[in-house]
Image 1 (cartoon, one colour):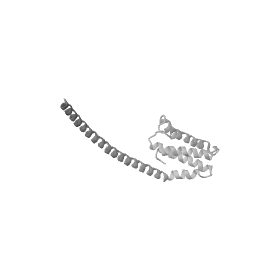
Image 2: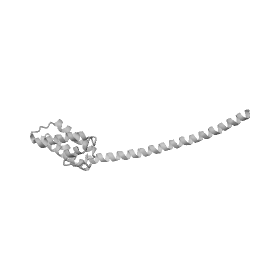
Image 3: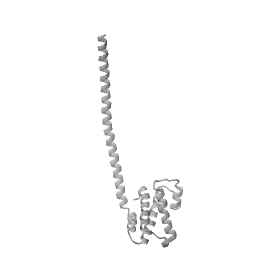
Image 4: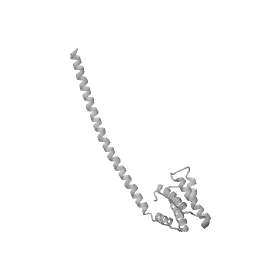
Length: 164
């Protein structure tokens, strides 16, 4: 009886030792694999950061956007109007490049469906200001705060499209 217990304990020891070795190998493999995945993710994130920084630096060199920003710091209401109209032209080009169809921004946004991009609402609001300027001309009064708010809406949309 004690001999059979001894044999049973010996077999349990062999089985538990084997299982421990197998689990140790699995744990070791998992740790190494985690480090490999982490290194790959870091490389991927670094690449995305580099792409973003390049896009930001390229946007900073967008001469048309720089002109718009220079116009809004002016004290001239005429310059503000030009800035908004120029930003609207950039918006139209961005929408066309993005595959939106229609004759003009209003049609493109209408044909786009419900909220086709994150800054859709800003595109409409900014374009409405441009329409007011175009239809009412110099009788449409602009406040500096409204100009800045409108240009910031254009900026949000154009950033989403990678223009600025």
